[in-house]
Amino acid sequence: MQIFWLKRNLRLQDSVPFFLSMKASRSYGKVLPLYVHEPGLIAQPDVSRQHQAFISETLVELSTEFEALGGQLLQAIGETVSVLERIHRCSPITRICTHCETTQNAQYERDIAVRAWCREKEIELMEVEQNGVARGKQSLEAFAEYFSRAIGNSLKDPTGADLSQRFARLPFTSCAISDIPLAAGADKPGRQRGGRQAGQDILNNFFNVRNLSRYPSRISSPNTAWASCSRVSTYLAYGIVSDREVFQAVDRVVSIGHGTLTAPEFARLQNRARFFLDRLNWRRQYLQVFESHPHVETRCMLPQFDGVREAEFDEGLFLAWSTGRTGIPYIDAAMRCLRDCGWINMRLRATLVSFATMNCWLPTHRVAQLLATEFLDYEPGIHHVIHQIVSGTSDFQALMIYDPMKQARDHDPQGQFIRRWVPELADLSGAEVHELARTAGCHSRIAEDLGHGPYPAPVVDCKLTAKSAKSRIHALKNGFPDPGRDSGGANTSSPQLGLI
Ligand SMILES: Cc1cc2nc3c(=O)[nH]c(=O)nc-3n(C[C@H](O)[C@H](O)[C@H](O)COP(=O)(O)OP(=O)(O)OC[C@H]3O[C@@H](n4cnc5c(N)ncnc54)[C@H](O)[C@@H]3O)c2cc1C
Image 1: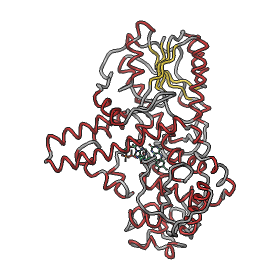
Image 2 (image 1 turned 60 degrees about the horizontal axis):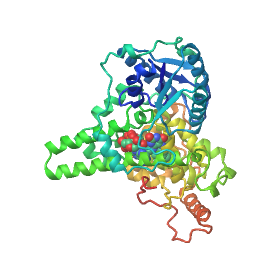
Image 3 (image 1 turned 90 degrees about the vertical axis):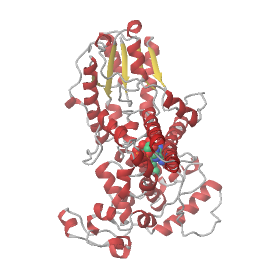
Image 4 (image 1 turned 60 degrees about the vertical axis):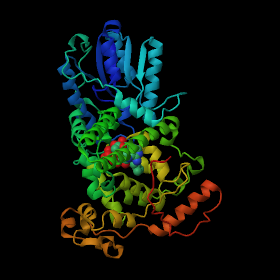
């Protein structure tokens, strides 16, 4: 019997391991789809209840999809090796087909244990590469070639097929959902829903000429980003849709534009499509960096930063930042929005991390770990590498210190976002929310009804702390303090997070 092992790639469409296992059912035996709820991984500090709830919703849909094809998904609780051992005793396993994943170290360790077990039992393990990430000694293919190949591939979709003769029967019954250990934290009321249908809706609805044409201009403000970003990250992170499916969706839009737009409009669309694809290229690059530097999950990319912020860890500042009570309205609005919805746009993420690591001098890994549990789309490769860049602990030379006050004035000039998420400031009008002398001590009836006390005064002076962080980071990187002009500490030029 073969196992089609679902880890983070929770889909049947464009799933090479699923396709290959089905294709080989005569030679290797029938196929058992398997998902393992692993207590050791569920207990990891970067896993939270919202991730687990999202996965559960996805598995419900997947189970239905398997049934429609004539099979059944086995869900089991336990460490993967012991679950495989149990299956193997009931019905000998000939081969395991799965995706090769670039993910957090705990999951990578699990993969190593499975590899060793397969070797010991002489079971073939097929790990199919994806996302164009090179492993081991391979060299990375250029993005343009990877993209061209991806849009040229015909993607397999088994929907509608009768594959009942190729599926194995369950060797034992699936676990009861109520027995699955719960991850820490609470679910989020405003998060995206799990399942292929929700991912498919994004592929069908976001990718059209209108959305792609206006994409770049509306992604930086939290007031427009919600409707203007694709929101596909979560479905990519859990492999509910593949990167190839997203590439093909972009390509489709460009083809439609070619047939319907004027030449200048089409040139503009092409330009915007490239802008969007740049981000998918960054995604791949970050995954690749993490593949080669997995230690950045727990250590700094530049070792001279290890322990530096940790030695000055301020619990009070961490609490203020992580609960949205820093007294800096834009930061608090971002954190409270994130805690409710599990998503904020990229610029806001960078502003939040810059404030935590530069202004509050909080340790990069404490910040990254907390945000890993808050981001529903937590993708370890992207997440940890960007944290290194924003906190100045990588070899990326340009230092990006985001001034949260400037970011707020630029991207939420009338304060709608701030007032929505910081009800203490609900009675202030327009740009008044940007005046810290007014916001400190502010309270409103709405906030009182919601149980909020008066709004706090700023926990740090943003200009002074940015200046100090800049000079310390410069000294740590170069061995001497920053000799440059005093820019008030805040480099407010537009950062290019995609450049490594
Ligand atoms: C501190 C920090 C932490 C981040 N952590 C994550 C994370 O855990 N998971 C995650 O998917 N993204 C992360 N990002 C990148 C980015 O913020 C999100 O990908 C994006 O906001 C997701 O929303 P979207 O799908 O609507 O993006 P869109 O703007 O629609 O972009 C399309 C896709 O491109 C990719 N992408 C976009 N921006 C980036 C980027 N800067 N780097 C790499 N890929 C990008 C994503 O796959 C995204 O889904 C992080 C950014 C920062 C600054």
